Length: 146
Image (tube, rainbow, N blue to C red; front, side, top):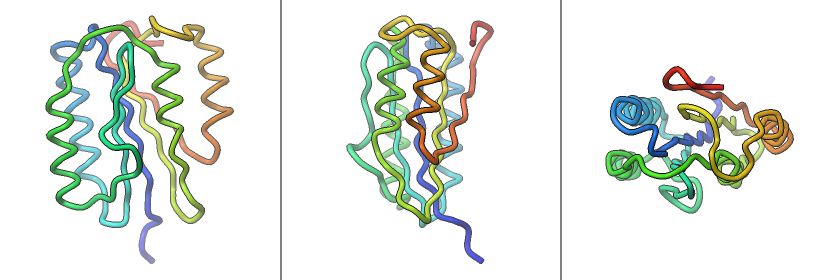
């Protein structure tokens, strides 16, 4: 039968340490993710450094127009500021996935939090408490990843 529709949240680190090659890789990963979405899927894009911004306030349907706009938004991201992982996770977990949809959260970072909660164990505990039914995947870029 048809695949379960997915709600995919892509959280991308745009702190200063991501500038250059790492940000290029992160944007490429984002484009790849957008290109993998089917017409029944929905997505959210969240970028974070010291603060958190997102592509849209709620889920976006994976329409050609939305995917194009999302790619433009990704292309415009610049790497500057600190690394507020706690706020990024909170924003990433904000939108709920209804029953019958598969919730995925992809978290792309190059390392250690410098803003807000910085204890890795507490961040992990928070994530496992808040993620609900969602599957969470973390991708590390560079050598200093925990």
